[in-house]
Length: 252
Image (cartoon, rainbow, N blue to C red; front, side, top):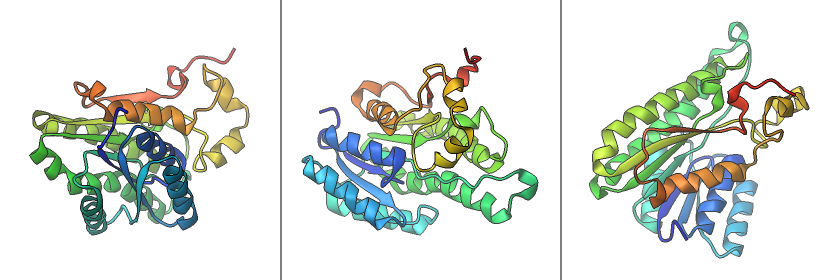
C-alpha cells in the first residue's frame, strides 16, 4: 500500500473525481477525510462503501470558500487522524455563460470555490506541512485553463490561476520537503460535466484521440502517484490527463 498510515484530505470528495480519489487513497492505506458541502446522501454512501472495503474515512461538512470553515475542518481532521500529510484541492463548480451575459454572482461563485477554496485549505495545512518537512499538495485544475471554451471565462480564469498558484507555491515549499502539483483533467464522465457532454454528444469522443471519455479512476490513479513517495522529486508540475484531447488532433 503506497499511502499506508498517511492522512489525506480531499475537498469536494463526495462526488465525481473527488469521490474516485477518496476511494483510491483509502484502498492504498491512507486515512482519508473528505469535504462535502450539501449532499449528505452522497457523503453517507461514500462512507459506507469505503468502510465496507476496510478503509478509514471521515466526512466533514464545510464551505470551502470560507477560510474560517477550512481551518475548523482541518482542525477536526487533525483531532481525529493527526496531521494532514496529503491535501487534494478538488472542490470546483461551473457557472457557464457568455461573458456579456454572465452575472457577477456567477463569476464570483466560480472564482471563490475553484481558486479561493484551494487557497483556504493550503493556508490551513501549509505551516504544519512546512514544520513537519513533509507533505503533498495536489490541486485539480482543468485543460480548460489552456484550451478555452466559449462561455467559460470564469472557469478558465479560475483554473489558469490554480496552475500559476501551484507553481508559485511549489517554489516556496520545496525546500521544506513539501511538493505541490496539479492535475488537469479533460472530459471526465461526472455529474458536473454531464450538461456539456449531453449537448455535444458523440462529437466529444471524436475530439479525443483515445476515443473515450475519462473516468474518475483515471484521475485518481495519477493523484495516488503524486501523493506517493514515487513522486518525491516532482513539484510545480501540471499533469494533463485528457486522452490526448489537448493535442488538437483532427478526428479521423
